Image 1: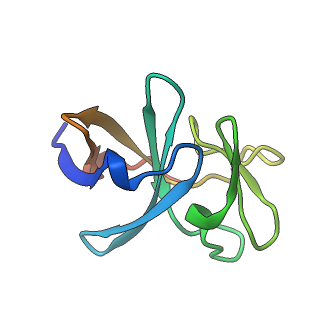
Image 2: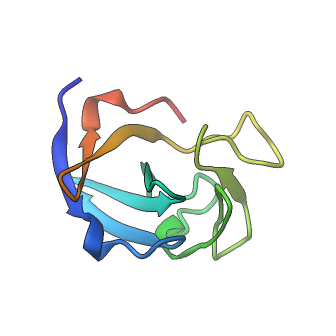
Length: 108
């Protein structure tokens, strides 16, 4: 697993998404819970490319702000249609930063 520094934790608001562009990818970062756990997914909703980082987040589910498609941040699966998925990336927190493995993307 090749980890890359992605974003400082102090730039992430608990329970809300943060947009990050890295290596030509647009991704959404959610830091949830105590201790903080990072969830990193592709930023585009597979339905109509809605901005998932701007979506409402409840527990570990984010809702696309355009059409309310909801995705489980732990699996990337759509809550209402599990065959529809968003790519997830392995991530961890190190020394106050979120690190991501960009090669770990699961297929949507």
